[in-house]
Length: 244
Image (cartoon, rainbow, N blue to C red):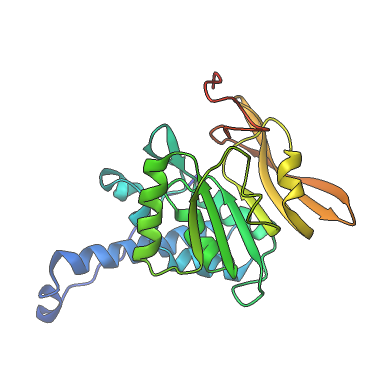
């Protein structure tokens, strides 16, 4: 369980006071983010992933009244019955996808843009990120946040009738931030050779986070353990009004 971050305070000089509350908030967020990364590093070893999480301001992706909890290891509501994933999951998924880094030329698809936080982290780990979102209100807000952060290698698209973004593929990695009842063949088809699909699979009572690898026309999978996500809606997933 994540411990609330504790901060070491120093007596401020007169020049420090001129920075005002904005400076205090910036220091607090920076310190809390570093504490979050230290916690995530207990399970996530990829330094590039940790550096990306250290760079992206998670508090900018949560509602203002929840920013005090932005760096705790917990999922938080973002509206429309959706959540921003807990930081540990945000770190584990790209590590499991074994991304080559921004200079590696890899293209990544994310299903479920949500707040845009995971896409922002992915932007530091891949050459190009395509993220899709079915709830237009969330998609617009996520796109605005990503643009404000100057992340030009991310495109936030409206989800179509078919799962994923088949017209944009193939992808070197696909990360799904909502649970499917089984591994969707349509997503496997959108993987490039040696592509990796990271997806929670199960039902409302719980799921397993799976890593699916496509090689030579064959698919292999391994489990990272139990998890809990909101349902993936659409073709090859759960129906719109499924009980959850």
